[in-house]
Amino acid sequence: MVDSPQRHRDAALAVIGALLVAAALVLIWLARVSVPRELYVSELGALGEPTAEQFRLALLLLVAGGMLVAWSMRDLRSRPPLLRRGTPALTLALACSSFLVAAQVPCTQACPLPVGDTFTVQDLVHTLAAVVAFGAACWAMLQVAFAPGHRALSGLTLLMAVAVGVVAATGGLLSLARWNAVFGSRLELVATTIGIGWLVVFGIVRAARLVTRPSIVSLASPDAA
Image 1 (cartoon, rainbow, N blue to C red):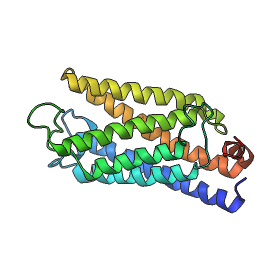
Image 2: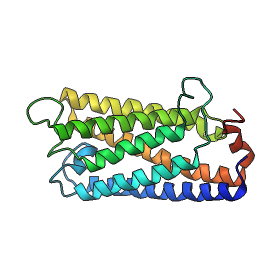
Image 3: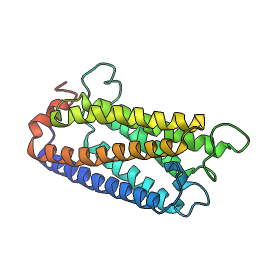
């Protein structure tokens, strides 16, 4: 079992991480409502957009907060063999790392689709980073949904993981099909909100469990597994 001082430190990091992630979500929404036209979330950070720096700051806050939450759950393991290939913490860290790349390599003006002459190498890097980030985030949520120690959140986490994957994929497909882009952009914003919102909730719940129910949290450790 993890000693009490370390549990309290991890709980504090989880709370700080959750607050940073919450701040990121607020910044993303403030940037979105400040733009009068319909656009995909990534376009908020596109080169030349007035919201570019605000969106970049939001992604950096998301990365920092996500890493802190990931550290606080480094002992967590999923039960199913397939999901045990890597820990939720490592998967979340991969998602955060991909978001960091997306923040440092924004798409070009209007975030062109991966077809035609306007699509650049920079757009390719940004798009791949964003896809990996969303995919890894969904996988981390699935791992948490089937991990011991957070029973109250398991059902909600599973539902939200499926929702993020389906909604984000649908929005992406609509974008590629160049059909109903308005609806597609709104779906992407919904998926982003659900995913980030889950991380905020999980960070706070994780902190509470570390402090109040260490015996349950310890069940998720490799030795107990």
